[in-house]
Length: 326
Image (cartoon, rainbow, N blue to C red; front, side, top):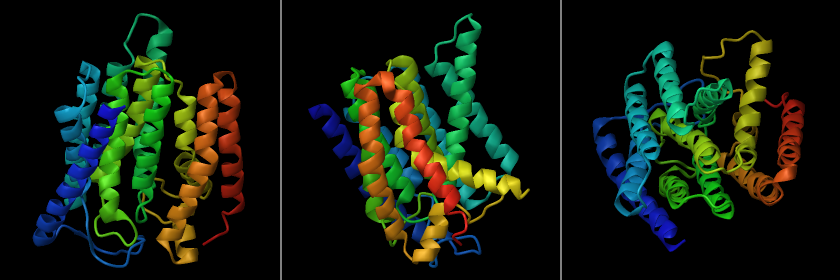
């Protein structure tokens, strides 16, 4: 556990330092996200700081973390590549098809690395399911990075708990350290991203952030025998908000790939005129509702599916009832 704490602290310190350097250089270069009609911020803010977060994560794992298996190294390399692609997109937007193609390729390769392929159909079905999950969550996490602090809070809280629950389920040191590094890197970034934000992670952070969280669930399930249900519970707020918003937009026959401000968290931020209040609501729901359910699903695995349903059902009902908020 002491080694895991060291990884967390190195990642957090590294992210804070690298974000400070990035902010200085990006400000000079004019790498700013300017407010637009669909933006939730009012002041031009440095964007693309996700490259500093991912760099800090890699630094912590490679410098002070335990040895990683080949699949773990491949995931790290892919997260760095996705961060680079995200930074390019932050500075000069890429086409939707190109981005989705890159994400799909990364998801497919990662699923193949983490879910050792066999000859049985069920093995290939598992790889397909894992690839689809990674691809979907990359995009969902990106959708949810729309106000100050929220996406970083999700990454921090989910990674901390995935590591802790991994320990309870006997996961290997490299897996726990990977969770700890992810949590530490986003904790360091929160110093600059908490309301009012001085840095945005941009696609350079939201794309690899979603990729890493999704990959940690797959790695825990396929390589370490860690149940996927607690992880799905920990991500319930992001998944429920994204899914209900997509369903409502599809019913209205809107173009799902176009930017918008219709997620519940965005509508609440406008209604309350506060990003901080939305973040506090997330923290309360996450730690007083979802974390206890995830812990129960870990220690009582025979009820994991039921507890997962219990986590999602009230959230989905609430989000449907609150759809009139503008």
